[in-house]
Image (cartoon, rainbow, N blue to C red; front, side):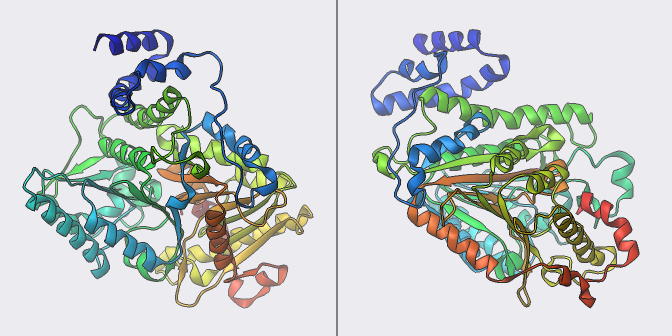
Length: 544
């Protein structure tokens, strides 16, 4: 062990405490990698210790519509993302676009039942209906099978939910999971994130129905061994039946799964821990989110979460490339897709997703086309300036009033669809005032008896008829996503022809159910917005 320790000291002497703090977590992995490959871990340090950037890695020739652009060109076009986040190289054949709520639900059930090592699920909440109970039953079945093994149980189940939304009502997410926690205490973990912004008098005064407006855990990650689903969908029956969202399944992508497992664990570590008696406690030594000092909590949470991002970043520099292919024996020709994890947690001082999204929209020139969708169309001022001021062609898809998730809601919430009509009209009028109607198009999604919750974008370079990049995950591009909630999504950059086809089909399927907005749209009787709704719209933009 003398040699590894000496190299540790060398790295500690070169890099800042923030960087060296995660080095110890990496060293064991390096030693294991050395044993597998029969080489020296010292050689793996060369890229980190060299002053110059590592030499560009060899990449394959294009097979898809990245075509004329070429692999090197496509790689160079988005290589800047590596400055902000880890870049995982995976085979495009391992990525599958799911298109329906039922596909999403069945994929989760099947993979929970066969999981052997880990099930990690992060969502806003877990519903309380029959479909949600069947998911819990799948977890119970998997845990029972694990305990029946002759050896010690290997399967671990970790659930991360939002405290406020998961605790609402007498029957809630917590009561759904308590039987599992009581029976499989050593294998089960339920973490409930509580925003540090809901505290003191505010916490006492805001009604339970609206306390989630202050800030929530909004990440949607569903992980089973080395496969993972990234989505914007929650664990609730409508998301399994008639609420349209987006979902991407990455199969046998160990490094990506490890990253998100570590990320959920880190957020879980700074969250309240559900106990078998339905009480909650914090891990020893962790600042309480609403009883402790707000700045101290945010600083501790930021440090713990950024350890995960920094560790993955350094690990890639140590190995000299952006994560080798997921299968050690895979040929270079199959390494045709990059996955960039983007995290946004502004209450904790983390704004990686915001920085990357702004750069992506800034770089989208006249030769690019962007299809952007959000169930709640409420672009931040910065995003709106970029859309209206850049040269790219935009087609923006949002929910029509009748497929808005708040349509028909009681009380103040029932006015939210009207507020989004007002927001859409303001945006459309601004497009017209700037004479951008030929470049920026607004569409509304329609589907009887369904609601619309899809978010993300598809990015087309010049001359391409299929997207080479997509953003998919939990952010909505609005104020809440940027400033209030914990969010995560992935940017997928691919040269794989079949994956590009899947993305194109997904985009077309969603937009085929839409109509383009025109000035006459807002003259329809059902688009009338009452004055009081217009007056409270700025408040709604910040909290819904």
